[in-house]
Length: 269
Image (cartoon, rainbow, N blue to C red):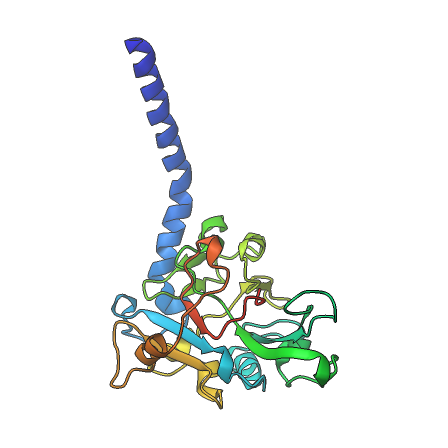
Protein backbone atom coordinates (compact mmCIF):
# COMPACT_ATOMS: atom_id res chain seq x y z
CA UNK A 1 0.00 0.00 0.00
CA UNK A 2 2.86 2.36 0.78
CA UNK A 3 4.45 1.78 -2.63
CA UNK A 4 1.09 2.32 -4.34
CA UNK A 5 0.52 5.52 -2.41
CA UNK A 6 3.92 6.90 -3.40
CA UNK A 7 3.32 6.01 -7.04
CA UNK A 8 0.00 7.80 -6.99
CA UNK A 9 1.59 10.81 -5.36
CA UNK A 10 4.36 10.86 -7.95
CA UNK A 11 1.86 10.64 -10.80
CA UNK A 12 -0.20 13.44 -9.31
CA UNK A 13 2.86 15.64 -8.94
CA UNK A 14 3.97 14.81 -12.49
CA UNK A 15 0.52 15.73 -13.80
CA UNK A 16 0.67 19.01 -11.94
CA UNK A 17 4.12 19.77 -13.33
CA UNK A 18 3.04 18.97 -16.89
CA UNK A 19 -0.06 21.13 -16.54
CA UNK A 20 2.08 23.96 -15.21
CA UNK A 21 4.56 23.65 -18.06
CA UNK A 22 1.80 23.61 -20.66
CA UNK A 23 0.18 26.67 -19.04
CA UNK A 24 3.39 28.69 -18.89
CA UNK A 25 3.23 30.16 -22.43
CA UNK A 26 -0.36 31.34 -21.91
CA UNK A 27 0.38 32.66 -18.41
CA UNK A 28 3.44 34.53 -19.67
CA UNK A 29 1.45 36.00 -22.52
CA UNK A 30 -1.29 37.13 -20.13
CA UNK A 31 1.23 38.70 -17.78
CA UNK A 32 2.89 40.49 -20.68
CA UNK A 33 -0.51 41.74 -21.82
CA UNK A 34 -1.17 43.30 -18.42
CA UNK A 35 2.23 44.98 -18.53
CA UNK A 36 1.41 46.39 -21.95
CA UNK A 37 -1.94 47.78 -20.82
CA UNK A 38 -0.58 51.33 -21.04
CA UNK A 39 0.30 50.87 -24.70
CA UNK A 40 -2.52 48.76 -26.10
CA UNK A 41 -5.42 50.38 -24.26
CA UNK A 42 -4.64 54.03 -24.82
CA UNK A 43 -4.23 54.62 -21.08
CA UNK A 44 -2.77 57.92 -20.00
CA UNK A 45 0.98 58.00 -19.36
CA UNK A 46 1.71 57.62 -15.68
CA UNK A 47 -1.67 56.02 -14.94
CA UNK A 48 -1.43 53.41 -12.17
CA UNK A 49 -4.20 50.78 -12.49
CA UNK A 50 -3.48 49.44 -9.00
CA UNK A 51 -4.77 52.68 -7.47
CA UNK A 52 -8.25 52.51 -9.01
CA UNK A 53 -11.26 50.19 -8.98
CA UNK A 54 -13.83 51.22 -11.58
CA UNK A 55 -17.52 50.53 -11.25
CA UNK A 56 -20.57 51.21 -13.42
CA UNK A 57 -24.06 51.50 -11.96
CA UNK A 58 -27.27 51.69 -13.99
CA UNK A 59 -30.65 52.91 -12.78
CA UNK A 60 -33.22 51.24 -15.02
CA UNK A 61 -35.94 53.52 -13.67
CA UNK A 62 -34.14 56.55 -15.13
CA UNK A 63 -33.37 55.17 -18.61
CA UNK A 64 -35.66 56.69 -21.24
CA UNK A 65 -34.34 54.67 -24.19
CA UNK A 66 -33.08 57.72 -26.09
CA UNK A 67 -30.12 55.79 -27.49
CA UNK A 68 -27.63 58.62 -27.07
CA UNK A 69 -25.30 56.35 -25.09
CA UNK A 70 -25.08 53.75 -27.85
CA UNK A 71 -24.55 56.43 -30.47
CA UNK A 72 -21.84 58.17 -28.43
CA UNK A 73 -20.09 54.85 -27.85
CA UNK A 74 -19.98 54.11 -31.57
CA UNK A 75 -18.47 57.48 -32.38
CA UNK A 76 -16.04 57.61 -29.45
CA UNK A 77 -14.63 54.13 -29.97
CA UNK A 78 -14.84 53.79 -33.74
CA UNK A 79 -17.20 50.82 -33.53
CA UNK A 80 -17.91 49.41 -37.03
CA UNK A 81 -21.18 50.33 -38.70
CA UNK A 82 -23.92 47.74 -38.69
CA UNK A 83 -25.07 45.37 -35.93
CA UNK A 84 -21.99 45.85 -33.76
CA UNK A 85 -22.26 47.47 -30.35
CA UNK A 86 -20.11 47.88 -27.25
CA UNK A 87 -23.18 49.11 -25.42
CA UNK A 88 -26.82 48.93 -26.41
CA UNK A 89 -30.34 49.32 -24.98
CA UNK A 90 -33.07 46.71 -24.78
CA UNK A 91 -36.78 47.45 -24.44
CA UNK A 92 -38.89 45.13 -22.32
CA UNK A 93 -42.65 45.13 -22.82
CA UNK A 94 -44.56 43.01 -20.32
CA UNK A 95 -48.08 42.37 -21.48
CA UNK A 96 -51.14 42.02 -19.30
CA UNK A 97 -52.23 38.42 -18.71
CA UNK A 98 -54.95 37.01 -20.88
CA UNK A 99 -58.37 36.99 -19.20
CA UNK A 100 -58.99 33.73 -17.41
CA UNK A 101 -55.35 32.61 -17.64
CA UNK A 102 -54.82 32.84 -13.89
CA UNK A 103 -51.41 34.43 -14.47
CA UNK A 104 -50.16 37.63 -12.86
CA UNK A 105 -48.53 38.86 -16.07
CA UNK A 106 -48.54 37.99 -19.74
CA UNK A 107 -45.78 37.40 -22.27
CA UNK A 108 -42.66 39.55 -22.40
CA UNK A 109 -41.52 41.12 -25.65
CA UNK A 110 -37.87 42.21 -25.91
CA UNK A 111 -36.48 44.27 -28.79
CA UNK A 112 -33.45 46.42 -29.54
CA UNK A 113 -33.72 47.89 -33.05
CA UNK A 114 -30.28 49.09 -34.15
CA UNK A 115 -29.12 48.66 -30.57
CA UNK A 116 -31.59 51.34 -29.54
CA UNK A 117 -29.18 53.83 -31.07
CA UNK A 118 -31.89 56.00 -32.62
CA UNK A 119 -34.54 55.50 -29.99
CA UNK A 120 -37.45 53.09 -30.23
CA UNK A 121 -40.50 53.01 -32.52
CA UNK A 122 -44.05 52.86 -31.24
CA UNK A 123 -44.73 49.75 -29.23
CA UNK A 124 -46.03 46.82 -31.30
CA UNK A 125 -48.32 46.05 -28.37
CA UNK A 126 -51.36 48.34 -27.84
CA UNK A 127 -51.00 50.48 -24.72
CA UNK A 128 -54.11 49.05 -23.07
CA UNK A 129 -52.50 45.61 -23.23
CA UNK A 130 -49.22 46.63 -21.59
CA UNK A 131 -48.66 45.84 -17.92
CA UNK A 132 -45.19 47.37 -17.68
CA UNK A 133 -42.53 48.66 -20.07
CA UNK A 134 -38.94 49.76 -19.43
CA UNK A 135 -35.47 50.06 -20.96
CA UNK A 136 -32.29 48.26 -19.91
CA UNK A 137 -28.82 49.46 -21.00
CA UNK A 138 -26.33 46.63 -21.54
CA UNK A 139 -22.53 46.58 -21.73
CA UNK A 140 -19.55 44.48 -20.62
CA UNK A 141 -20.32 43.32 -17.09
CA UNK A 142 -16.70 43.66 -15.90
CA UNK A 143 -16.83 40.22 -14.31
CA UNK A 144 -14.48 39.51 -11.45
CA UNK A 145 -14.48 35.88 -12.60
CA UNK A 146 -14.53 36.46 -16.34
CA UNK A 147 -15.40 33.45 -18.52
CA UNK A 148 -13.86 35.29 -21.49
CA UNK A 149 -10.49 35.58 -19.75
CA UNK A 150 -10.56 31.93 -18.74
CA UNK A 151 -11.07 30.61 -22.27
CA UNK A 152 -8.71 32.90 -24.22
CA UNK A 153 -5.94 30.57 -25.49
CA UNK A 154 -3.34 33.31 -25.97
CA UNK A 155 -4.01 35.68 -23.08
CA UNK A 156 -5.24 38.47 -25.33
CA UNK A 157 -8.21 39.04 -23.04
CA UNK A 158 -7.10 39.93 -19.54
CA UNK A 159 -8.18 41.48 -16.23
CA UNK A 160 -6.58 44.85 -15.54
CA UNK A 161 -5.82 45.59 -11.86
CA UNK A 162 -8.40 48.41 -11.86
CA UNK A 163 -11.31 46.09 -12.63
CA UNK A 164 -11.52 46.65 -16.39
CA UNK A 165 -11.55 43.62 -18.68
CA UNK A 166 -9.50 44.45 -21.75
CA UNK A 167 -8.40 42.94 -25.05
CA UNK A 168 -4.96 43.29 -26.59
CA UNK A 169 -5.72 43.41 -30.34
CA UNK A 170 -2.10 42.63 -31.16
CA UNK A 171 -2.42 39.21 -29.56
CA UNK A 172 -6.06 38.38 -30.37
CA UNK A 173 -6.23 35.64 -33.03
CA UNK A 174 -9.95 36.03 -33.68
CA UNK A 175 -10.79 32.47 -32.58
CA UNK A 176 -14.11 33.61 -31.09
CA UNK A 177 -13.81 31.52 -27.91
CA UNK A 178 -14.36 34.59 -25.72
CA UNK A 179 -17.42 35.58 -27.73
CA UNK A 180 -18.98 32.17 -27.18
CA UNK A 181 -18.01 32.14 -23.50
CA UNK A 182 -19.51 35.54 -22.61
CA UNK A 183 -22.92 34.83 -21.07
CA UNK A 184 -24.01 38.44 -21.55
CA UNK A 185 -23.50 38.69 -25.31
CA UNK A 186 -21.15 41.64 -24.86
CA UNK A 187 -18.48 40.70 -27.44
CA UNK A 188 -18.33 40.60 -31.20
CA UNK A 189 -15.79 39.88 -33.91
CA UNK A 190 -14.87 43.09 -35.70
CA UNK A 191 -15.42 42.84 -39.47
CA UNK A 192 -12.58 45.34 -39.86
CA UNK A 193 -9.79 44.01 -37.62
CA UNK A 194 -11.01 40.39 -37.41
CA UNK A 195 -10.36 40.54 -33.66
CA UNK A 196 -12.69 40.48 -30.67
CA UNK A 197 -14.15 43.77 -29.46
CA UNK A 198 -16.10 44.84 -26.39
CA UNK A 199 -16.74 47.72 -24.01
CA UNK A 200 -13.57 49.00 -22.35
CA UNK A 201 -15.32 51.66 -20.24
CA UNK A 202 -13.67 54.09 -22.67
CA UNK A 203 -10.32 53.26 -21.08
CA UNK A 204 -8.61 56.08 -22.95
CA UNK A 205 -10.99 58.49 -21.21
CA UNK A 206 -11.27 57.16 -17.67
CA UNK A 207 -7.48 56.95 -17.25
CA UNK A 208 -7.43 60.70 -17.92
CA UNK A 209 -10.06 61.55 -15.34
CA UNK A 210 -13.02 61.59 -17.75
CA UNK A 211 -16.23 59.57 -17.71
CA UNK A 212 -17.03 56.91 -20.31
CA UNK A 213 -18.81 58.47 -23.29
CA UNK A 214 -22.08 56.70 -22.46
CA UNK A 215 -22.15 58.04 -18.89
CA UNK A 216 -21.06 61.50 -20.00
CA UNK A 217 -23.90 61.94 -22.47
CA UNK A 218 -26.77 60.29 -20.55
CA UNK A 219 -29.41 63.06 -20.10
CA UNK A 220 -31.07 61.42 -17.09
CA UNK A 221 -27.92 60.17 -15.33
CA UNK A 222 -29.15 56.62 -15.60
CA UNK A 223 -25.50 55.55 -15.87
CA UNK A 224 -23.38 56.27 -12.82
CA UNK A 225 -19.64 55.75 -13.07
CA UNK A 226 -17.11 55.94 -10.29
CA UNK A 227 -13.94 54.76 -8.59
CA UNK A 228 -14.32 52.70 -5.42
CA UNK A 229 -10.77 53.47 -4.29
CA UNK A 230 -11.11 57.21 -4.80
CA UNK A 231 -14.56 58.37 -3.65
CA UNK A 232 -15.49 62.00 -4.19
CA UNK A 233 -17.54 64.32 -1.95
CA UNK A 234 -21.23 63.43 -2.13
CA UNK A 235 -20.14 60.28 -4.00
CA UNK A 236 -22.80 59.11 -6.51
CA UNK A 237 -21.71 55.46 -6.20
CA UNK A 238 -22.25 55.53 -2.44
CA UNK A 239 -25.65 57.16 -2.95
CA UNK A 240 -26.59 54.47 -5.46
CA UNK A 241 -25.80 51.79 -2.87
CA UNK A 242 -27.71 53.54 -0.12
CA UNK A 243 -30.83 54.40 -2.11
CA UNK A 244 -31.35 51.25 -4.17
CA UNK A 245 -31.69 47.51 -4.01
CA UNK A 246 -28.59 46.67 -6.01
CA UNK A 247 -28.67 43.72 -8.42
CA UNK A 248 -26.52 42.17 -11.15
CA UNK A 249 -27.42 40.31 -14.32
CA UNK A 250 -27.50 36.50 -14.09
CA UNK A 251 -26.14 36.26 -10.53
CA UNK A 252 -26.50 32.47 -10.59
CA UNK A 253 -23.53 32.23 -12.97
CA UNK A 254 -21.07 33.27 -10.26
CA UNK A 255 -19.18 35.69 -12.53
CA UNK A 256 -19.41 38.49 -9.93
CA UNK A 257 -20.19 41.39 -12.30
CA UNK A 258 -19.04 44.91 -11.44
CA UNK A 259 -21.88 46.50 -13.42
CA UNK A 260 -24.65 47.03 -10.89
CA UNK A 261 -28.33 47.66 -11.60
CA UNK A 262 -31.22 49.21 -9.75
CA UNK A 263 -34.82 48.60 -10.75
CA UNK A 264 -34.28 45.30 -12.57
CA UNK A 265 -37.37 43.25 -13.33
CA UNK A 266 -37.21 39.47 -13.06
CA UNK A 267 -37.84 39.22 -16.80
CA UNK A 268 -34.50 40.86 -17.68
CA UNK A 269 -32.19 38.31 -19.26
